[in-house]
Length: 102
View 1 (spheres, rainbow, N blue to C red):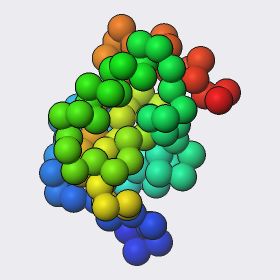
View 2 (view 1 turned 30 degrees about the vertical axis):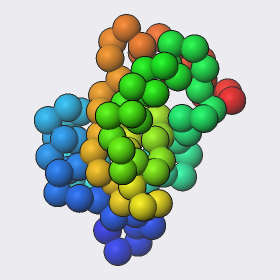
View 3 (view 1 turned 60 degrees about the vertical axis):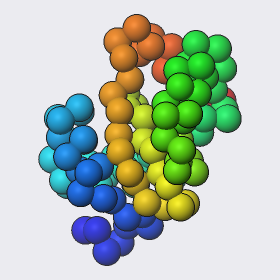
View 4 (view 1 turned 180 degrees about the vertical axis):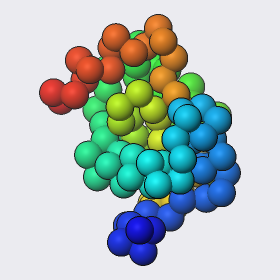
């Protein structure tokens, strides 16, 4: 399963996926792969959502890629290492589907 993955997922990221999103390892690995390949990057967002992602990006100095996929924000460092995952706050969830078409 993980050997076909193009990304590496840290133990911390798995813990946060379970804690914040309720995903087990298999679901977390699948979502991380989908986020990495099909997610919306930080630079492709606007408005409140962009400012929200700015705050996350600034709090993680080693982040090289911030990706929004579904109702979660995935933080990658060194290109393909997933470091942590945040759930999108409920006040932002209405904004997320509007950015899918970009």
